[in-house]
Length: 437
Image (cartoon, rainbow, N blue to C red):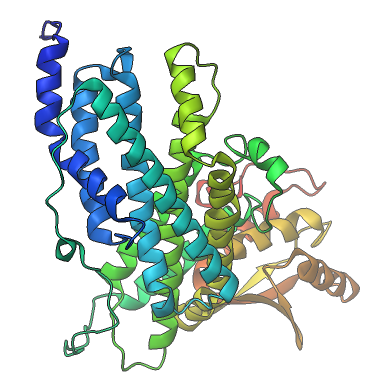
């Protein structure tokens, strides 16, 4: 049963806003009043701004404020506080924890992180000032802030409690290490395919967002990496006494910094697409969009998304690749198989490509062995070199050594003549090799 919609008067609605917006407006006044003398830059303040603005945004949306001439501007400003307070919270975490992350962060990343953080703070100040001014126009009650500085002390610290928890002997840890490092390598490969391994020029920003990168893509990767971090924390023991403990911590740090950068880029992309990107708005909505463009340095926002958050996410995921590869090869189960050579045409491009894709899919090391020679089975070029040797020596079988997961699938592939008939024409692959299609 659908509830019947009724019209609320402006007077009644103003009373509701007075009641629900008191904390948000007090926080905004506090933030604006103190930024020049001493910047109130703490996670707790940003968290409070997020909570208070979300409460007011929900109130406004429940009553259809975005479709009301009088209240739509106020609603957009509240949403702007929510977005930039959330981004500032994430950015504050990054700048506070950089020195504790084992990710090889250089001075350029540290400097740019602080620059982006300062941009978010300045933008939030501009928005808060405009929200206060709009509140006065609407007749919303503004109570002078009674907040104290000690309510917003810093969350981060370089002091830690004693590490006195006994190492955990988790069930199936070896299996989970293999699973998680394999997932990391696949995520890195997919993210690299987006092509953000270099910085973009300012004149290209508008062609990049949202055509090449956007909130939907970034949120997808954020969820994948969030799940990866959750799996790591659940299934991999934190035994600092084992010799590989520094590798595990560093891998966890690469996952964590990538997740925070994706959270930041997703939030900022959401804001640009929803509030600043020109989708043909007219009337009051176009006026509000122009106002927001004056409050927010749009080109800097795009630069922060593309050349900071997405660029460095690509870089840190890539830097963690060797760690993940090293741990994977250490913990995978190794084996050996003997497989037939593709009938008639041997190891030409198609069989080599399919074998390499299998090895790349699992991430563990696999080699093709011919006599005393070892060839990297993840490399199409190496396999083609091996194919030449197979042809010259007129061999009918070869050996593969390495990751048993990949070997099992290579065995399946070999059983169907590497996915082709004797004339070299492709044939359907079995369900087990779905990822090769």
